[in-house]
Image (cartoon, rainbow over all chains, first blue to last red; front, side, top):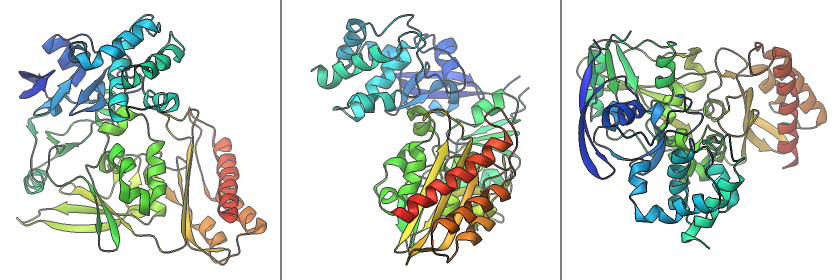
Length: 157
Length: 288
């Protein structure tokens, strides 16, 4: 039997209390315990960014984070961004620019892109590319994604 | 199989040191190394898992006398963005800029990068050439004591350090560079992001009248630990930094490293990289 621990945290603005195995990843907790499957499992070792979430405003790979470390912190997932009017321009830009093909990388891309734009509202293409270094996409060749994020800068320009 | 019997998330250093004193503990900070390494079976959990992420007072960069003190829980992003780091030790910010990805820099801590003790750890080579020291705290008999050790002497093998079981790395201290100090860092990988170094090189010293003194050279990913290159340093120390000195130093560098073949490069290629890039870096120092 593995050890369980009770944790309590804000998930997309709502208090959540769950019991998790102490070695469980934050990703498995979100998908399997809480049931939010927008955050994807890609590589499981921090290379692909499909599991990107925000913790206290900073983006991290949920596959590298211990679920117990969520205790007392503020977690935002793609489901939180989907309900956030501030992310409307970014979501629409992904659609308009064809930045979504198979869609598997998209939740991580959008969460990371939202973080880039919040940290640097005037981000240029080079800054966006650097910011997305930890997110892999095997379909688009990245150009459409970078274009989408750039067009969402300052709510579109 | 996990054998964890206890999970602890102390909020104070005193509490954390007390837990370390009670038995075998796996320390969790950012988790970016611990999670994949335990999943892959390369590290086994000890009976207590202690998450130090929420211990107060262990993060941030401050000027402390004639040193810069970086708390162990300072994330790589925080080091990268810190104005004191940029002002006094920009070479460390440069190394942090080459570190993994934004997501990993946001989670990973400088103390974690040090204690993971990878021969290819990105911050280790610049910290060694900056004469950094680690600050280790423990509470052996009820009161907190601290000792410092040069980072260059801290590593004993891949994943192994001189940290005692009851000790917690609380900070890394970097002496403020003297006037005329130069420091360079180079990391070779196949892409800028998320790459583990094939080799890395740090060079530092005080440049005066065309010669380097207090010369420090360190290499990453060419030995079981990051290493000081004492023969390369000796080939440079006090000598006019001209083409013959640079060539002698680059040769000394190639001769004194003893790398292995692995998935990232052959030993031969690593030695060539060490020679050629040491030479290029010294050329740049000489021309600056």
